[in-house]
Image 1 (cartoon, rainbow, N blue to C red):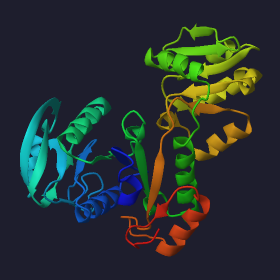
Image 2 (image 1 turned 90 degrees about the vertical axis):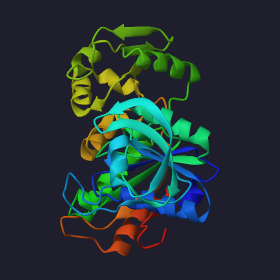
Image 3 (image 1 turned 60 degrees about the horizontal axis):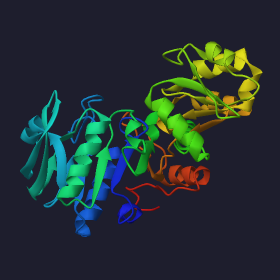
Amino acid sequence: MLELIKDKYKTISIVGMAKNSGKTVALNHLISEAMESKFPLGITSIGRDGETIDIVTETEKPSIFVEEGTFLATSTKMLDFSDANIEILKVTEYRTPLGEIIIGRVKDGGYVQIAGPQLLSEVKEVADTMLSLGAKAVIIDGALDRLSQAAPTISEATILSTGAVLSRDMNKVIEETLHTVNTLSLPPIEDEGIREMARQIIENNEIAVIDEENKVEIIPIKTALNAGCIIGDHIRDNSKYLILPGSLVKGTLEDLIHSTRKYKNIEIIIKDGTKIFVESKDWLRFMRQGVKVKVLDKINLIAITVNPYSPKGYYFQPREFLSKMKSYVSHIPVMDLMLGSE
């Protein structure tokens, strides 16, 4: 797995489809490979990770073991739960319920718990700091069911972890994973001028329509939620793009479709694929109805890890699960790290 990132990316996020999908196994695998290659990693997280008992599901989970030379950003209270010897290099200005965020370097290896900054902008800052201190790459470990750290503004590459915890039905797990892969990998808007216009509109948290002559009409509403019909009233015959700054949800798309047939002539532009909150079956229906969605920044999904075991006691046959997932996701490396095959 290290070869996927080494000398290619500086910031890599590991995101999970759900709790117990195998994120920590993926993180430990990367750490182990980095140790063997004498490749100093930096590690931080959004939320808490590394505890031996999952505080949400009360099930056992892998601890995070770090070797000498590893950099990490975590909260001061988490140092009490770590048996690694950590040299504090910097105390940041960022505060969390678990204390201040510190940046340290491991002097003697051991197990650690990590609770990084709460804001994505702060995660980006501490990652940049660890890189400046000597880390060759920084791994950002995500929180429960959050994909926001996969955003290109935070990480250059993303590893997605999925598994049996999603459903007892293997086909359902594959369907949900494929949907996430497709939405995270949405294509960027190609027109550079439109991209910059859309970026400014999104940064201003505005909703707007851009026509064929690149004229912008700001729609005077604060959110697209429950406003699909209002948005539809502003789509004209010459409308070409609809810019949405926040989340894209089922209700907005349904109202838009019901309010105007002109939605087929436009491309909806959102910030990135983490902003989509539409279930797979609904998403496929919208695509068949002619909805077109593009992004400002495409997420660079470089690998998928699969976990065939669920903490609820059921499991899939590992090789069957891996083989079937690979057959549906053929353009991205898919691996079961416990099997040791890719």
